[in-house]
Length: 178
Length: 286
Image (cartoon, rainbow over all chains, first blue to last red; front, side, top):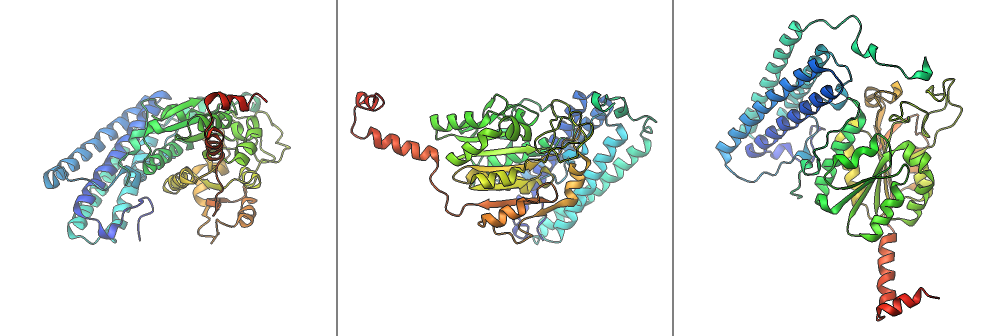
C-alpha cells in the first residue's frame, strides 16, 4: 500500500535516482520544520527548547547534504521528477507538536516521535518498493532513523527534569474566566 | 508537471501564530497546492480580512492584501474584474467570513466569480483572545459567554451549499495531503469555490477541536461513498457540521455555469463591437 503522506509518486516504480531525491527532500522538510520550531520558541521566549530545535536543524542539514552529495556523485545533474509538493511530514515533526513554553524534555519528546514516525515510514515503504538499489537505500535510512531514536533517548535520559510548575502555568488566563 | 516548488510561494516573513496553531499546516498545504497548480507567484493575488488566519497573504510571495475586517470577498471580486487573468484566493477566519463579512458571502457566491475562498474555522475569535465566534457551538464558555453561549452556530458548509456555491469542501491540517489536494481542486474549479478548514486554535480552542481529537473524528467523504455531484446528499452530510468531521468534496457542480468575470468580459466585447470610444461612453449617458 502507498504511504498516505506521499502524493503522486508510485513507490513500485521508484528508481534509485527518485529515491535519493525523495530522501534529500525528506531531510530538507525536517530541517525546515525544526528551523520553524526554533524560531517559534525564540519568539515565545523558550530559549532552551529553541536551542534544541536548532541542534536538530543542524543534524537534518548534515543528513540532507550527505544524501545530496551521494545523489550528485551517482547521477550528476540528471533532472529530478520528485518535488516537495509530493511529501508531507515524513520526518518533520507535526505542526501540532510545538507548544508555547515547551520544556527541553517536551522538545526532545517531539523529536523522538518524529524519528519514530520516519522509521515507521521507511519500514512501510520497504514493503512496497521493488528496485534492489532503492530497497538497500531505504533499509539504510530505516536503520539511521532507528539510530536517531536511540540518540534522542540518550539525550532524554540526560535532560533535566521538568520544573514542578510548568512554564505555561505562568501565562495569564483570559480575564473574564477568573 | 509544474516546475514550481512550494518554497517559491514562501515569503521571508515569519509567521507569529502560537506554536501548534493549525494555520501553520494550512499555510504549508497552500504552498504545495499553489506549486501543483503551477501559476507563478506574480499571477496570484491573495486577499484576506482581519484575524490570525488573515495574516496569510504576508507569508506568501504572491500579491497580497491584508484588507479590512470581513471585506476580503468584495475586494477580491474587484481584483478579479480588473485583472481577470489573476488567480484570486481569499483567506480568513470564521468570524471574518460569517459574522463581520457574513453579508458578502451570499453575493460573491450568487455572482459566481472565479475565486477560491478558504476559511480557517476554529470556532473562536483567537486574535482578540477567545471571544464567541459565529461558529462557536451552543453552550461554549468563553470570555464573552462566561455562562455558556445561548446561540446556535452558523453552519458554513450548509450556508455555502444553500447559496449555490459550485464547489464546497472541508479539510483539516491534520490531513495535510488531503487538504493540499482539496485546495488545489478548489483553485482549479472554474467558479466560486469554498474550502472550510477545521484549523485548531491551540490557545483558546475547545479540546474537541484540537489535532488529537480531529485525528480520531476525521472521516473522509470518499470512505462514506458520497457522490460529490449530488447537492442534496451534500446538504444532508453538511448538517452534521459540529458533530462529525467529514473531509473531502461535499459538492462539485458537474456542469459549472459561466463565471461573472467571464460574462462581464463577454458583455464588454459585445458592447464595444464596432463602436468608437465616444460611442461606448454615450451608452452610459442615457
